[in-house]
Length: 173
Image 1 (cartoon, rainbow, N blue to C red):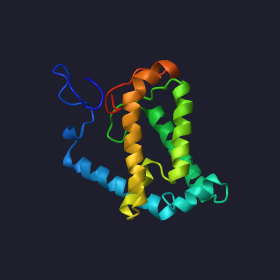
Image 2: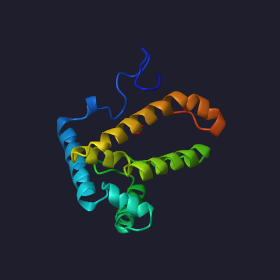
Image 3: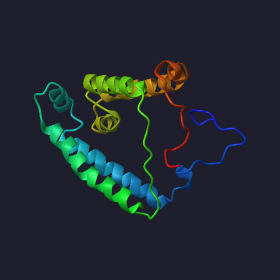
């Protein structure tokens, strides 16, 4: 298949993990998890522009604690998943090491600059929209334009930055 969801006649009808194959119960479960995650981001201040600006200016340290807690909770969970090799549903799990390349540096710089300027990364953009903060719509538009530009420019950037070929799919297979 091609990028951006365009499929050819030789492609599988659905990619692994497509919502079409996900049961309604699991969809509700995912919706619930996303809602709880958004609530936690909102109530903790992780979606608040002033807290994020304060973090980048080294004036507010609350978000460093939140990030540290996330790492402290996630690291043992990933260790257990790697050690026992199964997800909660019993499916085998594999961690593929991603190659380092120049794109990691440029992508990290762009992501950090956008996060610092807007005070939002992708998750908090939706939280801020849900809180009624209209300026988050501009951040969402910038994110979508940036993702589209990345898709269009990737073939040109691939040679310059020595990027690997794109893998089409949901990341589950």
